[in-house]
Structures are given as C-alpha cells and as structure tokens.
Amino acid sequence: MKDLREFIQKVDESGECRVIEGADWDLEIGAITEWQSKPNTPLLLFDRIKGYPPGYRVLTNLAASLKRLALMLGLPEAAEPMDLVRGLRARTKGGFKPVPPVEVATGPVKENVHTGHDVNVLEFPTPRWHELDGGRYFGTGHMVVMRDPDEGWVNLGTYRMQIHDRNTLGSYIAYGQHGDTIRAKYWARGQACPAAVVCGYDPLLWIISTTRVPWGVSEYDYTGWLSNAPIEVIRGEITGLPVPAAAEIVLEGEIPPPEVESRMEGAFGEFTGYYAGGVRPEPVFRVKSVMHRNAPILQGNPEFRIKPMYYWGKNIIRAAEIWNELERLVPGVKGVWMVEEAAMHFPVVAIHQQYAGHAKDTAIAAKAVTGMNTRYVMVVDDDIDPSNISEVIWALVTRCEPKDSIDILQASRVSRLDPLLSPEERDRGDFTSSVALITACKPYHWIKDFPIAIRTGAEFMGKTKQKWGRLLS
Image (cartoon, rainbow, N blue to C red; front, side):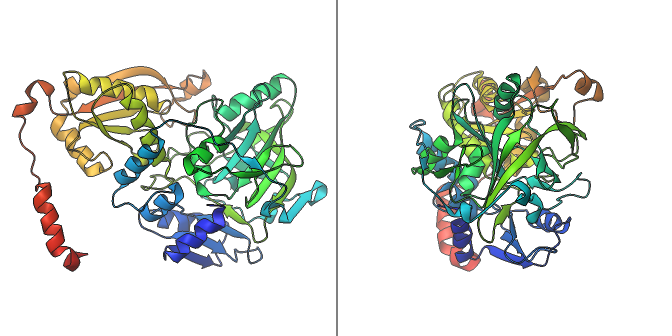
C-alpha cells in the first residue's frame, strides 16, 4: 500500500474500522486499546482527542484480525494463522533480493514543516499508555532511521521514545541492537548520531522494522522485496536521511553521546509485560525539525501484559523466516509458529520424525536461528497445529516426559528488560538466561505403537462441513 491511509480505507471498506471521538490521551486511549486488543476486534482510530483539534488522530489495534493481518502482509485472506505463514514462506523461499527505495522530490509528509523555535512534539496527541508509565511515549508504532557511518547502509528500527519536552525525546535502544551499534560508531568519533523518527506508513514497513533483518541489509530494501515494489522516499532536509514520502509524521534530529546529554527515561510497560527496566539515565534525541501531513495520524503500538494473537503480525514473518532457515538445517519441518502471547521468543516447530534424535536436532537448530530473548523452544509432531496453543499444550502434557525430553542450555543472551534478571545480574551486566529445549513428540523408538489420537478423518470432516456448513456458519 502506498501509505497508512490506504490501509485504513481498505479496513474501513471491510467493516473493521471504528472511529472513537472524545477520548483522553492520558490513559484512556491506552485503556481502550488494551480492552479491545484481542482477536477479531476492530481497528481503532481516535479523533477529537481531549485538548487537541479535530484531525489530530491516533491509530491503534492494527492487526487484531486475520483479515487485517493478511492485508498488511499483502497476502490472500486466510482461514487459519498457519495459512499466512505458508503463504509468506512461499513468497520468500527463493531468497532475499533487495529492492532499494526510490528518491522522489517531495511528498505528503512535507505539507507542514516546522524548524527552530516552531518545533513542538507536544502538538501531537501522544498518549500516556499505562498508569505506571513515566510519561508520554511518542515512539511505540514508529521507526528510527539511521545510516551506518562506515558502511553507508540505512537501518530502520523500532526503539521506544519518551517525550521529555517540546523538542527532546528519550532514546532507549537495547544493547546489541543495530541502532545501538550504529549510534556508538558516531559517539566513538565524538559526534552526535543523525536520526529521523518516522510515524505512520504502510504497516508492512513498520512490521519489518520490528523484526530481525541481517546486519547490512536495509529494512527499506527488505520491505521492497516483500512487497515487490520500491518505497518512495524523500531526503530529510536536516539529516539527509531517506524517509518515506507518504509518512504521517517525521521528526529529524540527532542523538548526542550519553556523556554530552542523558536524561532519566522510564518507566514503561515493556514487551515482556512488566516494568523490569526501571528508571535510568538514557541518551536523548534532540528534535530539530518536524514534518507532518495535514490531519496527521500517530500510530500507537503499546505493549500489554499478554499480547493477543495477531497483535503485531511480526510473528508471522518470523515464523516464515525460521521455517525457511530450518529447512536448510534439518529435514521434515512441517510448520513453525512464534507464540506471540509468550512476550519473549517461543518458537514451536512441527516435524515429521524421520530418525532417532530428529526432534532434538530440530530444537537445537530452532534456538540457533531464533536468536536472543528465547527462553523456550518446543518441537511437536506434524499432527499438531503449532499455531493452536491448545494442541501445543496437549502435546506437552501427553508426549513430553520431563526427565528425557527437556534439555537446558546456559548463558543465552537476553534483553536487560527481562524480568527474571536479578538485581545482582543487572549490576554486573550479566544479561543472559537459560533456555529449555522441549521435545513434545511421540518417542521415536516406539512411535508405531504410540496410542492413536482421537480425531475425525479429514475426508469425513470435509463432507460434514459441506453438508452442515450453511446452517452453522
């Protein structure tokens, strides 16, 4: 899609968009979003927000239906979540071929440009999402654009940003993230890191900015490949960075070294569902210009205690990527799912067992390709739908003998936001965790004698649905 507004229009045409007028930016928008963020609830567009003029809007709950998620990913509408994983996997199986962005002279984001004393990020109805948040967070559904000073490639990442005042945001980027590595290169030279904060664009680009794209690959190129069309960008007047021409809001500025300026950042309701990161000094983002469209839309994607399925959609992309990577390492992979409700990475892999130790090999490989912030990996048989948490738990309690089927790996990297890190581990910078590899599969050496599971045959079930579907739909 060419921009966020086309996405909203298509969702509205499908009957899944709700406009809510008169809500308060202070907690109320966050509470409504949390209340509605569960499967098959509408896209929420907030307007006439308390204290702000009509047209200054906030959009939340982007992916809370399979229909919207398919639209975001550019896939046909699906009956089941795994249909989307299979569709995306089929599209990407040929391997990544970059489709770079194209620069255009201007775009809708330049309808309003503010610089100098006219810069005021408080002109947007940024919510305070949760009661214990330390302030208003402009950056939840956004992208931070940076350019590597040595290699020249452009990175887009979603790193939370708290409003400090009219032209200063907090800038928290977890250690080891691409954005952290890039800004550290500027700091080592004694320079501030140029950056642009983009809010509101085709949701696919935003989803990709939240996922693991390899070092040196721009999310612009990756999204262009997935959508089979280059993204139109303009050159930022302050930073020279490429930003989407049809974005809703773009802030340009710089992140100075922390010893030059840091401010207390947090607390914030984090991706794990806790306030584990606390309040601490973090670098700032100095805003030097603001560009925005008429009637701008601030995209909001706050974290919750338990993420509802389809909340972001990045679990679909990661599942397809992991499936493709696993297929090169182990045979017989029949399905992959990332359990989004788990907050931290929790891959479930379905396999057709072919040899003794096959399930264990798969679990080890799945941990390797999933990366940091993984505490559990589970492997199940191919009669289990890995996206159906009820089936996964059933396999866990009926096919997993704990003394034989759970292995523990030590010292795997996690974020400092992990709530299980003790105060002592935080103080010494030990951001590691153990990982459980769980093989919830039928024992291979007597798999043919394993009791038969209760299930209506596919042929008879198909005839039943055909006969009674009209009455029960």
